[in-house]
Length: 501
Image 1 (cartoon, rainbow, N blue to C red):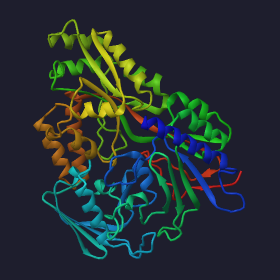
Image 2: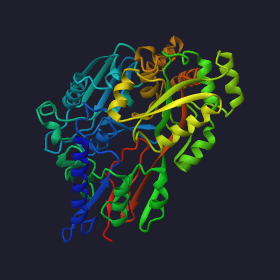
Image 3: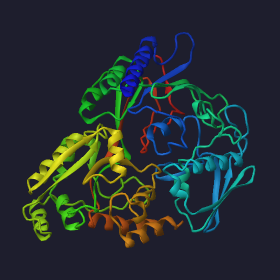
Image 4: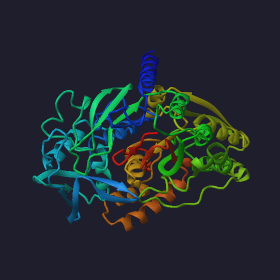
């Protein structure tokens, strides 16, 4: 009931926004540039430390708060950090940009970085394990942050891309994240979870004030409503357009459509705690039984390609492996060797609306498995129930999308596949050694070699099936300039402009 109420309110808000938008590019007579963005998922909160892994939260908050570093074109670039160095393998020293101020005029210092880190750690969010070997995180002086680790930590930069920084004297106060303050290009004018987010330009932004005077996140729950809004000019930018809706959008007048590589992908895990998935021959058989080339092409077109690793190719450290060929005879051979010549019965769960064409992908896989004697019961679940069952390992197979949030292979591989993670019942001490070795190296060349070996183990042992890596897509009105969809799927609007039309 609550979800329905929120969807109704969100739809009314979106409609009101559209009706009031005489000219979506600007308010009549004001000269102010206004852009309206309708995301596929709307933020339930702006508390980036509590919801550090949530795409919708990150997309919103990065307009307001900033990290020390960011990944751009596969490389780490400065944001609030002017430079960094390793005086020794267990020490990182960050020099901060001078003369940066928060939007309320407060000077930005190293104490703000430390306070933000400490709050993130205290909340024990999903990214806390990434900092497990950090022994000290200190403000050496106003413009220097020094990080000490018990072991070398080559993943620190990638982890810090998701640590957004607020003022030390305010970040822990009640209600701060209802209207957070940051050093970023925009400030929060109004926020209602699941309903509305309005941002205003930060005229004092250290990297130059954005041209947009106002940036509105518009909540339109239904895909059809978002597309109609774009076509009518009530919405300026859309992202995450389902494959079956692409033709309508890309063929519309005055709309530009584009696809870009992403860090998102599909995977189907086996619960190796349950028979027969404790036998890797069964897991391998199920992979050989799938005609992924045909399925991915038919369902996704140019929005996906058959995966070549357990992480997308654009991720730092991603190996390039050979996909399993479609070989039903090989699948039957392996099943027979595992004592299952007549196949077996199992189930697959996935979250409702858990990714583009997820139901169709599940159905195609189930159909292929039936051809080799494996009967799979489909279990599509509401997201809340799916999350509960997923966490409790209450499933045989689990299909879902994932995104390598930091753009570094460690975020996915060492977080999900080490024995201590206990995510899917699989455990390999040899894999642990490789992944933890990659995490503790600050030599990217060495890390790449270790990830190649680790990826091959995950591949050969068929810990899961990796059907496809996904592309990001977006569409915007032609009056929008300089919009770029990054591989994270979380666009920044700092340099975007709109013109009257």
